[in-house]
Length: 261
Image (tube, rainbow, N blue to C red; front, side, top):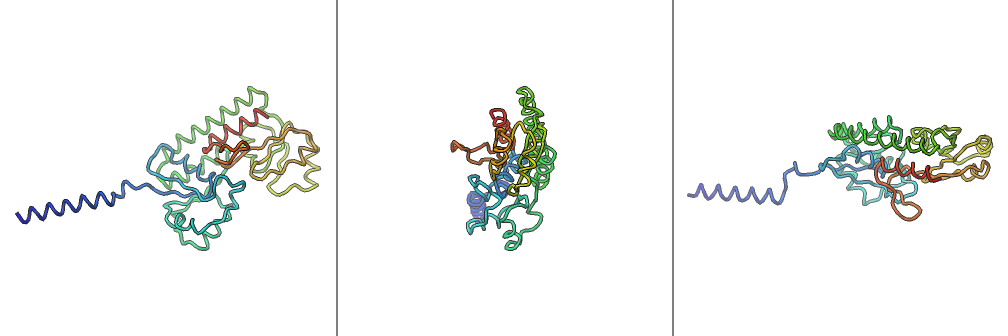
Protein backbone atom coordinates (compact mmCIF):
# COMPACT_ATOMS: atom_id res chain seq x y z
CA UNK A 1 0.00 0.00 0.00
CA UNK A 2 2.81 2.42 0.93
CA UNK A 3 4.53 1.62 -2.35
CA UNK A 4 1.33 2.41 -4.25
CA UNK A 5 0.93 5.70 -2.40
CA UNK A 6 4.54 6.62 -3.13
CA UNK A 7 4.09 5.90 -6.83
CA UNK A 8 0.92 7.99 -6.88
CA UNK A 9 2.76 10.91 -5.27
CA UNK A 10 5.59 10.65 -7.80
CA UNK A 11 3.17 10.60 -10.73
CA UNK A 12 1.32 13.59 -9.24
CA UNK A 13 4.58 15.54 -8.89
CA UNK A 14 5.58 14.72 -12.46
CA UNK A 15 2.24 16.00 -13.75
CA UNK A 16 2.69 19.25 -11.81
CA UNK A 17 6.21 19.71 -13.18
CA UNK A 18 5.02 19.15 -16.75
CA UNK A 19 2.26 21.72 -16.25
CA UNK A 20 4.59 24.33 -14.73
CA UNK A 21 7.61 23.65 -16.95
CA UNK A 22 6.49 22.60 -20.45
CA UNK A 23 8.70 20.19 -22.33
CA UNK A 24 11.43 21.84 -24.40
CA UNK A 25 9.89 20.38 -27.57
CA UNK A 26 7.06 22.92 -27.17
CA UNK A 27 9.45 25.88 -26.93
CA UNK A 28 9.91 28.07 -29.99
CA UNK A 29 13.32 28.86 -31.42
CA UNK A 30 14.02 32.58 -30.94
CA UNK A 31 15.51 34.30 -33.98
CA UNK A 32 16.68 37.89 -33.63
CA UNK A 33 17.25 40.09 -36.68
CA UNK A 34 19.01 43.45 -36.76
CA UNK A 35 16.25 45.27 -38.66
CA UNK A 36 13.06 44.75 -40.65
CA UNK A 37 14.95 43.79 -43.81
CA UNK A 38 16.97 40.98 -42.21
CA UNK A 39 13.83 39.99 -40.29
CA UNK A 40 11.95 39.62 -43.58
CA UNK A 41 14.62 37.19 -44.75
CA UNK A 42 14.09 35.12 -41.61
CA UNK A 43 10.34 35.16 -42.21
CA UNK A 44 10.85 33.91 -45.75
CA UNK A 45 13.08 31.12 -44.44
CA UNK A 46 10.52 30.05 -41.81
CA UNK A 47 7.08 31.04 -43.17
CA UNK A 48 4.75 28.10 -42.81
CA UNK A 49 6.27 26.86 -39.55
CA UNK A 50 5.03 27.65 -36.04
CA UNK A 51 8.31 26.64 -34.42
CA UNK A 52 10.04 30.03 -34.62
CA UNK A 53 9.64 33.54 -33.26
CA UNK A 54 11.20 36.46 -35.14
CA UNK A 55 12.11 39.70 -33.40
CA UNK A 56 14.05 42.71 -34.70
CA UNK A 57 16.27 45.31 -33.03
CA UNK A 58 15.95 48.50 -35.12
CA UNK A 59 12.34 49.71 -35.27
CA UNK A 60 10.65 49.70 -38.66
CA UNK A 61 9.88 53.41 -38.25
CA UNK A 62 13.55 54.42 -38.55
CA UNK A 63 14.38 56.24 -41.78
CA UNK A 64 17.83 54.59 -41.92
CA UNK A 65 17.84 51.43 -39.74
CA UNK A 66 21.57 50.61 -40.22
CA UNK A 67 22.33 53.54 -37.88
CA UNK A 68 20.46 52.00 -34.94
CA UNK A 69 22.58 51.59 -31.80
CA UNK A 70 21.98 48.97 -29.13
CA UNK A 71 20.07 50.02 -26.03
CA UNK A 72 20.30 48.46 -22.55
CA UNK A 73 16.88 46.90 -23.17
CA UNK A 74 18.33 45.01 -26.16
CA UNK A 75 21.01 43.19 -24.17
CA UNK A 76 18.81 40.30 -23.03
CA UNK A 77 17.44 39.72 -26.55
CA UNK A 78 20.92 39.60 -28.08
CA UNK A 79 22.24 37.34 -25.32
CA UNK A 80 19.34 34.88 -25.36
CA UNK A 81 18.65 34.64 -29.10
CA UNK A 82 19.06 31.17 -30.55
CA UNK A 83 20.14 32.78 -33.82
CA UNK A 84 21.17 36.36 -34.67
CA UNK A 85 20.78 37.38 -38.33
CA UNK A 86 22.71 40.42 -39.56
CA UNK A 87 24.00 41.94 -42.80
CA UNK A 88 27.25 43.55 -41.68
CA UNK A 89 26.39 47.19 -42.40
CA UNK A 90 24.71 47.76 -39.02
CA UNK A 91 26.36 50.13 -36.53
CA UNK A 92 25.14 47.93 -33.68
CA UNK A 93 27.18 44.92 -34.79
CA UNK A 94 30.42 46.50 -33.55
CA UNK A 95 28.93 46.50 -30.06
CA UNK A 96 27.77 42.90 -30.49
CA UNK A 97 31.25 41.75 -31.53
CA UNK A 98 33.00 43.80 -28.83
CA UNK A 99 30.68 43.11 -25.90
CA UNK A 100 29.05 39.71 -26.48
CA UNK A 101 30.70 36.34 -26.73
CA UNK A 102 28.06 34.92 -29.00
CA UNK A 103 29.13 31.63 -30.61
CA UNK A 104 29.55 31.69 -34.38
CA UNK A 105 27.00 28.93 -34.80
CA UNK A 106 24.39 31.25 -33.26
CA UNK A 107 24.93 33.99 -35.84
CA UNK A 108 24.54 34.16 -39.60
CA UNK A 109 25.59 36.98 -41.92
CA UNK A 110 23.54 37.53 -45.06
CA UNK A 111 23.40 39.93 -48.01
CA UNK A 112 20.23 42.02 -48.22
CA UNK A 113 19.19 42.51 -51.83
CA UNK A 114 16.09 42.13 -53.96
CA UNK A 115 18.09 40.48 -56.74
CA UNK A 116 16.55 36.97 -56.90
CA UNK A 117 19.87 35.07 -56.93
CA UNK A 118 21.28 36.98 -53.95
CA UNK A 119 18.02 36.73 -52.04
CA UNK A 120 17.90 32.97 -52.60
CA UNK A 121 21.43 32.49 -51.25
CA UNK A 122 20.69 34.54 -48.14
CA UNK A 123 17.36 32.91 -47.34
CA UNK A 124 18.87 29.44 -47.76
CA UNK A 125 21.79 30.38 -45.48
CA UNK A 126 19.26 31.09 -42.72
CA UNK A 127 17.18 28.01 -43.55
CA UNK A 128 20.21 25.74 -43.34
CA UNK A 129 20.86 27.00 -39.81
CA UNK A 130 17.24 26.43 -38.80
CA UNK A 131 16.49 23.24 -40.73
CA UNK A 132 13.76 24.81 -42.88
CA UNK A 133 15.25 24.41 -46.36
CA UNK A 134 12.11 22.87 -47.91
CA UNK A 135 9.91 25.67 -46.60
CA UNK A 136 12.43 28.29 -47.72
CA UNK A 137 12.56 26.89 -51.24
CA UNK A 138 8.77 27.14 -51.54
CA UNK A 139 8.81 30.75 -50.33
CA UNK A 140 11.69 31.66 -52.66
CA UNK A 141 9.68 30.28 -55.59
CA UNK A 142 6.79 32.52 -54.58
CA UNK A 143 9.15 35.52 -54.54
CA UNK A 144 10.40 34.71 -58.04
CA UNK A 145 6.79 34.53 -59.23
CA UNK A 146 6.23 38.00 -57.78
CA UNK A 147 9.23 39.35 -59.70
CA UNK A 148 7.96 37.74 -62.92
CA UNK A 149 4.47 39.16 -62.35
CA UNK A 150 5.84 42.67 -61.75
CA UNK A 151 8.01 42.44 -64.89
CA UNK A 152 4.96 41.46 -66.92
CA UNK A 153 2.97 44.39 -65.54
CA UNK A 154 5.79 46.75 -66.52
CA UNK A 155 5.86 45.23 -70.01
CA UNK A 156 2.10 45.66 -70.37
CA UNK A 157 2.41 49.33 -69.34
CA UNK A 158 5.31 50.08 -71.69
CA UNK A 159 7.73 50.83 -68.84
CA UNK A 160 9.84 47.69 -69.22
CA UNK A 161 13.31 48.54 -70.55
CA UNK A 162 12.92 52.30 -70.07
CA UNK A 163 16.20 54.18 -69.34
CA UNK A 164 16.64 55.29 -65.72
CA UNK A 165 19.05 56.78 -63.23
CA UNK A 166 18.93 54.81 -60.00
CA UNK A 167 20.14 55.05 -56.41
CA UNK A 168 22.84 52.50 -55.56
CA UNK A 169 20.63 50.74 -53.00
CA UNK A 170 17.73 50.37 -55.45
CA UNK A 171 19.84 49.11 -58.35
CA UNK A 172 19.35 45.33 -57.73
CA UNK A 173 15.55 45.47 -57.81
CA UNK A 174 15.40 47.96 -60.69
CA UNK A 175 17.70 45.71 -62.70
CA UNK A 176 15.61 42.63 -61.84
CA UNK A 177 12.49 44.46 -63.07
CA UNK A 178 14.06 45.04 -66.48
CA UNK A 179 14.89 48.74 -66.65
CA UNK A 180 17.88 50.06 -68.62
CA UNK A 181 20.23 51.65 -66.10
CA UNK A 182 21.99 54.72 -67.53
CA UNK A 183 23.78 55.59 -64.31
CA UNK A 184 23.94 54.93 -60.58
CA UNK A 185 24.24 57.53 -57.80
CA UNK A 186 24.80 57.29 -54.03
CA UNK A 187 25.07 56.08 -51.39
CA UNK A 188 27.47 58.99 -50.74
CA UNK A 189 26.09 62.52 -51.35
CA UNK A 190 26.18 63.67 -54.95
CA UNK A 191 29.19 65.74 -56.00
CA UNK A 192 29.10 68.48 -58.64
CA UNK A 193 31.04 66.29 -61.08
CA UNK A 194 28.53 63.44 -60.72
CA UNK A 195 25.57 65.77 -61.16
CA UNK A 196 27.13 67.14 -64.35
CA UNK A 197 27.90 63.67 -65.74
CA UNK A 198 24.53 62.12 -64.92
CA UNK A 199 22.79 65.31 -66.01
CA UNK A 200 23.96 64.71 -69.58
CA UNK A 201 21.91 61.52 -69.75
CA UNK A 202 18.26 61.39 -70.78
CA UNK A 203 16.49 59.18 -68.23
CA UNK A 204 12.80 58.42 -68.46
CA UNK A 205 12.73 58.12 -64.65
CA UNK A 206 14.99 58.84 -61.71
CA UNK A 207 14.62 56.18 -59.02
CA UNK A 208 15.70 57.25 -55.53
CA UNK A 209 15.95 55.46 -52.19
CA UNK A 210 13.33 56.54 -49.63
CA UNK A 211 15.69 55.73 -46.75
CA UNK A 212 18.34 58.30 -47.80
CA UNK A 213 16.98 60.31 -50.75
CA UNK A 214 19.39 62.53 -52.68
CA UNK A 215 18.18 62.78 -56.27
CA UNK A 216 16.68 66.31 -56.18
CA UNK A 217 19.60 67.92 -58.12
CA UNK A 218 19.31 65.27 -60.84
CA UNK A 219 15.57 65.84 -61.17
CA UNK A 220 16.20 69.56 -61.52
CA UNK A 221 18.86 69.20 -64.21
CA UNK A 222 17.20 66.43 -66.27
CA UNK A 223 13.53 67.23 -65.79
CA UNK A 224 12.75 63.52 -65.38
CA UNK A 225 10.05 62.23 -63.05
CA UNK A 226 11.17 61.03 -59.61
CA UNK A 227 10.09 57.82 -57.89
CA UNK A 228 11.23 56.87 -54.37
CA UNK A 229 11.31 53.15 -53.57
CA UNK A 230 11.79 51.39 -50.25
CA UNK A 231 14.06 48.56 -49.16
CA UNK A 232 13.16 48.04 -45.50
CA UNK A 233 9.78 46.33 -45.01
CA UNK A 234 7.37 48.11 -42.69
CA UNK A 235 8.82 51.57 -43.38
CA UNK A 236 6.08 54.17 -42.71
CA UNK A 237 4.55 55.58 -45.87
CA UNK A 238 3.80 59.25 -46.50
CA UNK A 239 0.16 58.73 -45.51
CA UNK A 240 1.26 57.16 -42.22
CA UNK A 241 0.48 53.58 -43.17
CA UNK A 242 3.22 50.94 -42.83
CA UNK A 243 4.71 49.44 -45.95
CA UNK A 244 4.35 45.70 -46.59
CA UNK A 245 6.31 43.59 -44.12
CA UNK A 246 7.41 40.85 -46.54
CA UNK A 247 10.01 40.83 -49.32
CA UNK A 248 7.42 39.91 -51.94
CA UNK A 249 5.16 42.65 -50.61
CA UNK A 250 7.90 45.25 -50.99
CA UNK A 251 8.46 44.19 -54.62
CA UNK A 252 4.73 44.54 -55.30
CA UNK A 253 4.60 47.93 -53.55
CA UNK A 254 7.62 49.30 -55.42
CA UNK A 255 6.32 48.03 -58.76
CA UNK A 256 3.04 49.81 -58.08
CA UNK A 257 4.90 53.06 -57.40
CA UNK A 258 6.78 52.72 -60.67
CA UNK A 259 3.57 52.05 -62.57
CA UNK A 260 1.87 55.08 -61.00
CA UNK A 261 4.72 57.55 -61.50
